[in-house]
Amino acid sequence: MKHFFHKSKETNEVFVLLHGTGGRETDLLPVAGRIDPALSVLGIRGDVGENGQYRYFKRQPDGSMDEESLKEKTKPLLDFLFEAAITHQFEQKEIHLIGYSNGANMAVSLLLHKPEFFRSAMLLHPSHPLKSFDTAELNDLDIFITAGAKDQLVLPGEAVQLKKHLRHLGARVSLHMTDYGHELRNSEFTQAAKWWSENIKTV
View 1 (cartoon, rainbow, N blue to C red):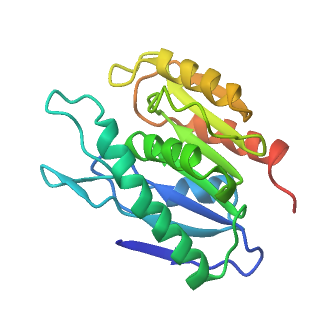
View 2: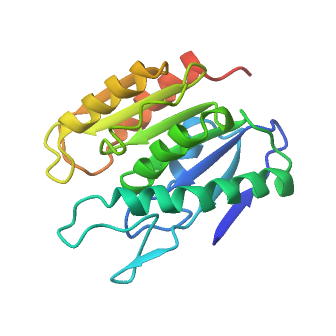
């Protein structure tokens, strides 16, 4: 998979960045820098093409989520993360996911399929994928979700339902709602940094 890796000299913990539709592996690098510049960063480019844009899984012809494609593409990404951990010398539970939109939905699938591999996740404007997936144990996971009250691509109720779903599976979940749409806003990064400082950061 197309990716980049920046190794930290301060900690073995790592942010894994999953961009939105049409993005690149470096898109969320400024976000990671705002949250905690001490961590290593692994940015991964989606390998599904859609009209010249990169995604992590396919959409249905009507634009709705293709959950079969999401599940199908989850395993090779997990395999890649396992290999990357060996190559770049980081461990399970040292991975913190940051995903936006399509990348946030893939992050949800990663968490549900392999929760023991991750320590936390920041899900920026996710939908509520894999609603019927009710077997994962997320007891050690901290999750921060953002959504836009005026989002016309992903209804804000999706984030609310996702929060309930993840809490039902044992995760500690916080939700920040903006007054805007699907675009990322500065207030989201401010709140994410605050959440990180209060719940995750140890140094």
